[in-house]
Image (cartoon, rainbow, N blue to C red; front, side):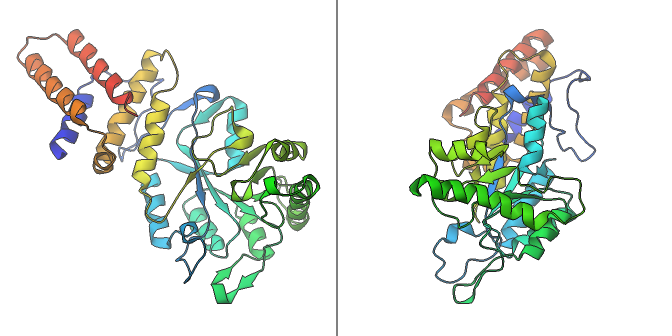
Length: 353
């Protein structure tokens, strides 16, 4: 398998010629400087976290917990790939401006667990941003018998002062689609007021009123979405799996991250989805995407093996293109022909699901 990975990387490296100015280059550490693409072509990665700690004994939802060690490894992977953590509202601002930097992935943390304050300090030290969604009846709650603790309002204000976004997550974390219309309306409206009230005294030019919303328990319907829009939220995240586009800003999907999630696999799928976008690519765009794919393949070779990126058909293609390169080396194929062959191979790789 290592040989097959090397063969693909070798094929991609053989693309020659200086990159046009429009093609993103790589930094001195070999990390990709991801491109800025039109909002209409962007598929944006939003990661969904909850508690960053070991699950307490008999935790009712152990999947909500990611250990600190696993979390650090996941963030390290993003950093190694030249990616940056951003808040949901900053992502929305980029989208509304018409272009999105694909290096920016949105980090979100739901429910306001006490360990989230440590998360904020850690991310701040890395110059990463994020959004923390708070059910406004939760701050300060403690359930020692269950091992569950939530941040205080002082800690939440501390996160805001560090530069993080504080988003709304209802008052009582109820399934909105199952509530009466009046109760759902209250939960959305009041959570916005509560956060504004708690942040209003902070000396900071940013809006104190929350501008984004997270739907608890993935429970929503048309009426809930209409209420979220009515109360002035610019965007809303759900628990639906997928990537954000300009078409689903008020029902934004997220990728839920677990303790054993391999961030390499998440990024590889994210990259391949964006490689497929854009319709008729300009020459410079295609050159960039080829170089991005080469870099990710180089760095993520083993995880791609785990996800069966190289099936039997791909293995045959690799062998075929090795033969073409031997013909080129012997002078039996000219550069124009080999460039076309490489381009066809890239199209095959990008077409992988």
